[in-house]
Picture 1 (cartoon, helix red, strand yellow):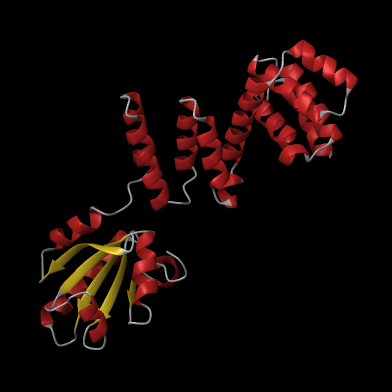
Picture 2 (tube, helix red, strand yellow):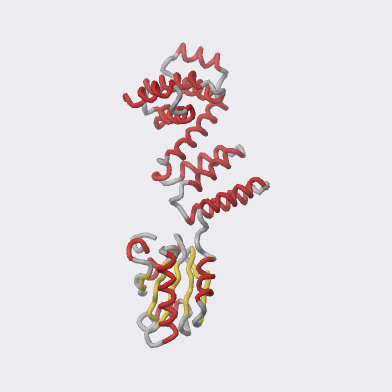
Length: 290
């Protein structure tokens, strides 16, 4: 949760009027933030604080606990309508989503915290696939999208969204999603491979028939778009050897063509063939000679 996250400074922080929006509002867009409004003269609020700090340590940073001393920060107490102590409010996505007034049992605090914890990515994926199988495609995509917002570093979530979009024929939507991801995610090998796969399918769908492509290449050997179309057609037809030969020629003539698409496509084919295939060594050596 940013520079002020539990990982950086512990699971419990103290906010002032100056730091509140950074510690609470901004961090709540990334995960749940529980704000403990207390005062040193209120015995029950001291007991609540002890309980919440124990929970914060137990949860290990899955939520952030921020304390506000209302004796010193009267403006914050007024801003959030705190009229009695103890009081705590849970923030998510920049707003209050839960609140408790008065000392409660430990179980009560656990309930409101657990209700807003991000669901593990593998569980989200399983749920989305069940929805997809049941014909609820839009809902499946939305479940994954919500989880991806909550866990922006989990590459598995946008990867599955793009795969499902492609499976339903929404290739342009899949491309748009992949291209909008942060560079760190786009560089992930799995996402790069999927982007390459979608590009090849797109090229193959738009390609002329193979005889026309061969004639065009013979007349203009440097027209790499024709060679790419031919490679795409061969890949879709499972002509691995023919596709690799054409991709290798594109890479030889211009390694950076279309963001090194030929190289990425060759690596995807090599992965598909497996280490035991005799062609793998030949093309892998060719790639790494450049």
